[in-house]
Length: 374
Image (cartoon, rainbow, N blue to C red):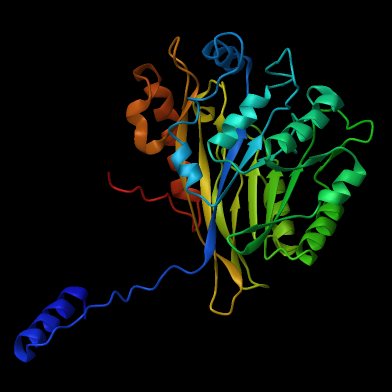
């Protein structure tokens, strides 16, 4: 019997008997759980540095407007993760491509937008040398931002891996690996978490033994500017799932790639795998690089108390470039395309058409997020 019929029956009984009746909402409360959000590559090209410095009056880098419109989606998650694809070199000079270095205020702006964790194992983490790589670790610690992927030395890595975080009563383990560092070797004891199957399997096992109920493995992999994953990415994803990964989150190509719920029959569960979330913010120019995606994953406890992935979804956004003084690079969600400057709508349409084609035809079990009506 639907709710309308139930209310009519209650009203009829009240009329016949003259007694009052109370209707109790029987919709079950949501189970305890946590929603995680993942975004892609947070770049910082020279034009972004120059614009932020201009917005700061020439004395500081001001990023306060960059994430204004996307922040609500980030902050509503219980825990949000982004790939910080730039060292925090400490200045006084900062630089864009090919050897990145950004001010601490950039990481602070990302944190202010709602990001709780920053991934540092990527191909640009050693761009400005070992001193800047180590300073990035120090800066993130000073800002109170969780981070994984690079470490002062082997002792620091042993102390910080596994990284297990309790979020709404569920213990999540996070790991981060990169395919390489642009040919710059880690020196002077600096530790970067490179893709090494033996080391990954060992650290995943240690993470589970440390009490992680849900294991999240984040990967810097794939071929730049290619909208589909390759065989190496698929093989690595399978390897990670076989070794107990509950989520596999990828980045690096600077364009989006498919998202799939992959069935792990040995554990009787689905594992969300995203091959690339694309750029989060950048000054890249081609249509496919002007936008990106975020993915949300909901984890809840079953009646038996076991934490499981319940669903995942995604949405897209566009990085609008400044149109003059008083504007900045701005991440605009897909439901606010009215905010995109008219001169850049064509770039949004190129990105949106390509992304929709990939996601609509190749995603498996991970739909677009349903927007709330306004």
